Amino acid sequence: MQSIMEVSGSSNERKKTWSGFWSGLIWLIVGFVCIVASQFAAIIALGALEIVQFGTELSEERIKELAFDGDALAFAFLFILPMIVAILAFVVKIRRRQSFFDYLGIRQVEKKALAIWLLYGIVFLIAAYVCDRFFNRPLIPEWMLTAYDSADYPWLFFFSVAVLGPLSEEFLYRGYVIKVWAESISGPIIGTVLLSLMWAATHLQYDLYDMTWIFLMGLILCVSRLRTNSIIPAFTIHMCWNTAGLVMLVLYRAV
Image (cartoon, rainbow, N blue to C red; front, top):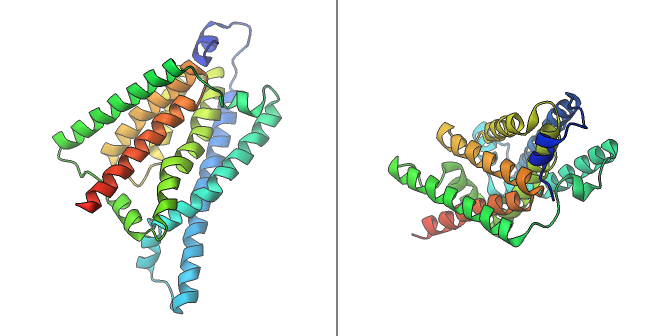
């Protein structure tokens, strides 16, 4: 099976245009707006619940705290995932090229290829950890500590961070957008760099140092998608990365 990168680089039959690039950008923005809207709705819902329970108005400081509330994050992704899937199902139907599963790369990949990409992800994770210790960076970001401590349903928080979040983002970023960008006039290389930059830029809860690592991880995830024509390696790496962060978080709080 040829990868998207191979097809994009060798086929002269399909004329590349800007339509795919703009399509990817538009639906990327739509998906991001849905993510932000869902998080905002979760914050409003939790705030309204507190007003009903305690009969007091929410202060501006409390609203800011709810922005990093673990339950707000967890409940938001319960809505984000089905919204992203519904949007992409609609888009794929409009394009009328392949089935939903084929177009988004929801297909099995050879075990050897999956193991190799997972190894790349592990090496990358170790490199990031070593650099963090070298530069004396905090082991756990402050926002994660706040989210974990405020979560009344920690199991849902863990599931959202480890599974729902990565799945939602991989469907949108590496499932749809990188495919149409790789097949458009932008090509796979520019598409990979640009998408990774945009993906890193959406993680505003991190500082510039952490966003740099997110950008580098985005490059790995995009390349894995293009080379295997599947989002399974990207999702697996992403899930393992987030799970490792959660394990360190639990161990940090247990000490």
